[in-house]
Amino acid sequence: MTDSFDTEFQTLSPDALRHLSAQDFAAFGVNVLAYVKPVVTQGILGYAIHAADGTPLAVAASPEVALASVRQHDMEPQRVH
Image (cartoon, rainbow, N blue to C red):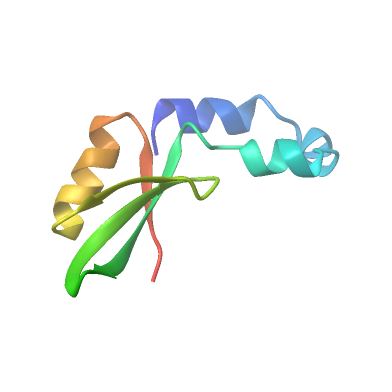
């Protein structure tokens, strides 16, 4: 995991996490996590990259390129199957 990911989780106590609003919970990790999932666009298999809140960011030709792109932007990739 990236340092920013670790830092964000360490700054919130378990009690603080329990009291996050729905909006705060939805935004939690949005700048440090990105999800990669296979998609078919115009009949071609690609790998979509989404921010933690579901915002589409990009589509890559291979999972390796998608994961590398996420890491290049100092985010921690997560695969979605």
